[in-house]
Image (cartoon, rainbow, N blue to C red; front, side):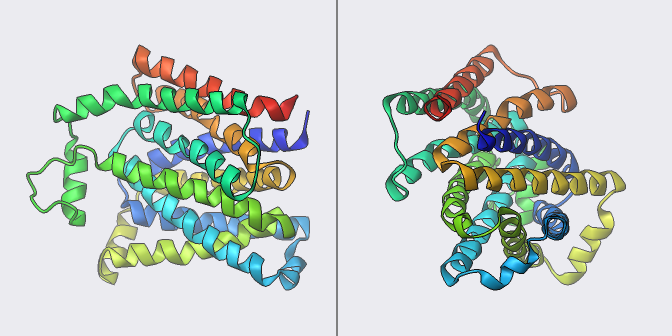
Length: 318
């Protein structure tokens, strides 16, 4: 078995844990503040790993173009996190993650266009199955939301953030908006990472990129309220939320480390689909720990999504 495949598999496991831990941790926390807290944890974890593997000296030999990709990858990561946390705050995991994981399709298209990575008939067929599976998982949920099913928590959050001009206007699909942008930025992260990580240790890349994300997350937190309000939000974070956000940050750091080691050894169009298989574990965890319900249509969509993902990886594994 290829080493990149093992790394990508571990990245998927930790990515699934990240989503569930984050969903639990942000239950009573502002989404921007939660992103900042988790990012701070990832920064500490990433730099510990840098010194453990002895990669810190490589910072003095980073080329200018690599610094460029570190910065834009960090900005894209921060945007993806902010949108994903907001989507998870407003919607269920089984709604947000199928769309978030659809970034695989866009990643493969971008890898074909900009990195000249091949896309054969089997891979194209897998992409079609993934798209159809995602559609099945979202279609029924979208219709139910059109009937006006909106949680009070989502309404109050949208009204507080000023995203609603009319407080009585329901935030029917606000999670969908954020999930779409999270997927777009996630695909850009993978492409930037594939190009930039070629000339740098993957562990050091993770640490430096996270340091770009941290000020962005903190800036968004400060931008949504006065300093006094931020301090109030920090004081209101419960012990349970702190624990789960910290654990989510550690899981994120581990997922990134495995993911970028996999990107260093394999093609983005092969690594990303394996990483996105975390959706299977994520949905299973959502059912077990969050008690989220799944229809037969959603389960069938998940089967198609998984089958399509495996098809996209098949050409690289034979």
